[in-house]
Amino acid sequence: MTSRAATGPEPAPLILASRSAGRAEVLRRAGIPFEAMPAAVDEAAVKAAMLAEAAPPRDIADALAELKAQRLAARMPDRLVLGADQVLVCDGRLYDKPQDLAEARAQLVALRGRRHEILSAAVVYEAARPVWRHIGRAQLVMRAFSDRFLDAYLAAEGPDALATVGAYRLEARGAQLFERVDGDIFTVMGMPLLPLLGFLRTRGICLE
Image (cartoon, rainbow, N blue to C red; front, side):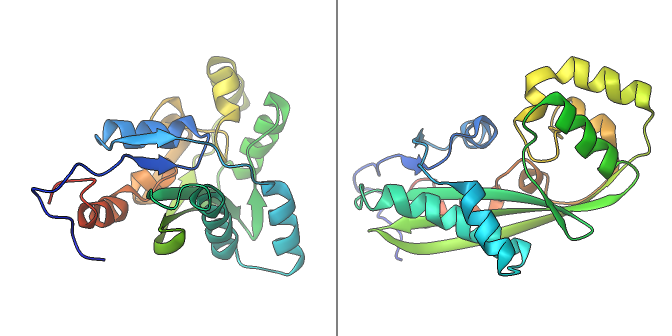
């Protein structure tokens, strides 16, 4: 895992094995050269199997992140491939992305006035094998907002409320849902960015 020479050839862009617009935006704003290529993974089936075995939430996030990276890395062993996944846990229950606004509303009602945890896993494959992984954690306390606010929030967010676990984007209107956030903002946005940047510097994707 030695660093690439500063005078060597430009490394190929990172492959992001995800269809998440949010994760792509985090990398883009950080100035990371990458190509997004969604990996074909049956996330629901993997989660169901692991939950049936009483796997802890961190293991589920890590396994899904690795599976995404593994799928693409097998086809492109000469590239760095990043897989990522995120889970939300509240009182032992895992929440997925809502399928419609009614489900988004039900999730937000369940989380209202309570503390929950976000875990964001990232795994990098190189030469078709895992070489780096990290799981970021953040604790969030959702305020006891009114039903009037909730309805106005969902009307304003529309389909964007369905794009994330928990039905909120902390970097946008979703910030109004909270009274406290403990932890890394990038973890909440779906990517443990700062540890990832540290690894990418060892591969010449970022300058040291």
